[in-house]
Image (tube, rainbow, N blue to C red):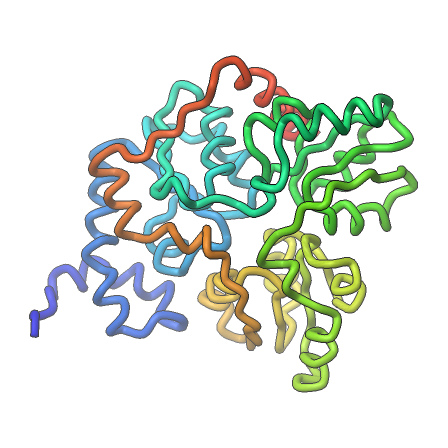
Length: 328
């Protein structure tokens, strides 16, 4: 048996305090070496780690400098004073960070960390939608490739989608690629929403029956749903919103018991700093988010892999779509 490095555990003990409610001590001991190495590499390379809310707690609370949903990460990416950005998330997030920081090195620890939504539509699909509905501006969810963003008028996230749609001077709007997000926004606006049939492979798994069963099993539970869930799920929930909005709800409303209908690491990350809230965890994992680990974050900083590059021919147009969103 390999002896534990007590000095290493002592150095990382303040970080373990943040996650001790969701990571047992023996598991933290397996993370501590990589956490310690990543912290040293960040100092040496003037690097920052941006982590999405769906990252596991040892990343989210252990090595990340900035954490949040897609909108917050997009905003904060423009403010970082660093030479290197490591995006602990999926590929479209790393592309967005690179769009907004063309002079910085942006790394994605695993090139296979993709997204079912981003994969559901191409730039050619957008051009065909424009040809069919020439009077309708195109709103592209940030969960899209750079090529799709370049063909769109403006981007949105689940947190600002309604504001983006309402800002457009058109009676009908194309929203892509998430069909359920588009349908949920359509319920909140008088504009006609034209949707694409893309779905998040995590959120589409939740059903209205799941919600009813949760209420039967836990009569006091407060149900929070992500707007990428089917509309009938959102209708059964007590609140629907982005991951940032769900976190804010928990931290301000303090429900005694709550369930988050979204990727399950989100519950762990909020639970770590809200010990008075009981989390029910119906666990749907995003296989793409889970490709990001402490070990490949460390490897990215050690070897500069994998650097994100964007075709200059489409970068300027895609950047304008993101910047229009950030301006709202």
